[in-house]
Image (cartoon, rainbow, N blue to C red; front, side, top):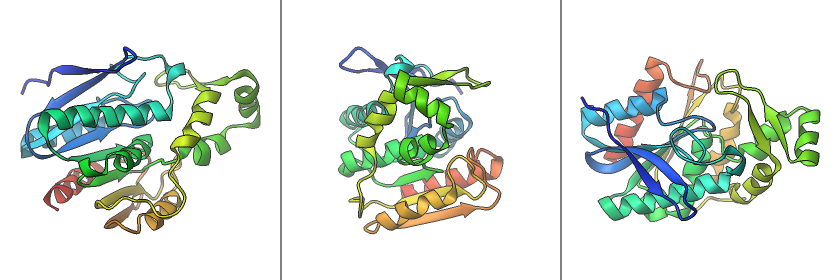
Length: 253
């Protein structure tokens, strides 16, 4: 089967978001990727294949400064990623008139939660995979060594090594701006069904990180699956099957 053509959503400042679509029926399954990941990852491609086999409508895209989208990494912020997701949903709503099932992985879970808060009428249900809501403040900053925290505070950034994708900067702007996108205290005004897949052995996003989220989602039908032996990627064959079947269940609600 021919690979989907790449499309672009132009943003007001001249940036372009790269996306790929699979035509199908029902709500649009929307892949929202993680920090420094792209739409060609294992889970995104598994959803693409499932969409083709099962007749789903499916969209995957790259965040600003990720993958095939444009943007300078030093200009990237959580707020930017959240606003881009909302703009993409607005654009797709205009062309399809459908609702969405965002599938947010790691940081993408935070973006998907903010998207649901910003566009509640557009979101039918939500699937979160090891979601890293508020990760800059709750997870990343506390884990940074003191010398790197000092570099961020005094020099505006620290450059983090990454053997796979190459070194990248963490900026003070990103940390400071992200505070405005942290989930609000108290009950979250999210009413759609929420399904969370969480690895018990995830060292990047510990499973207990999800307990305050589950408690805050008091108005929603919430399911939390704690996966024995599951790591942060949750990309093994059984994990991918579990993810696809979770989407199928949410589509049927």
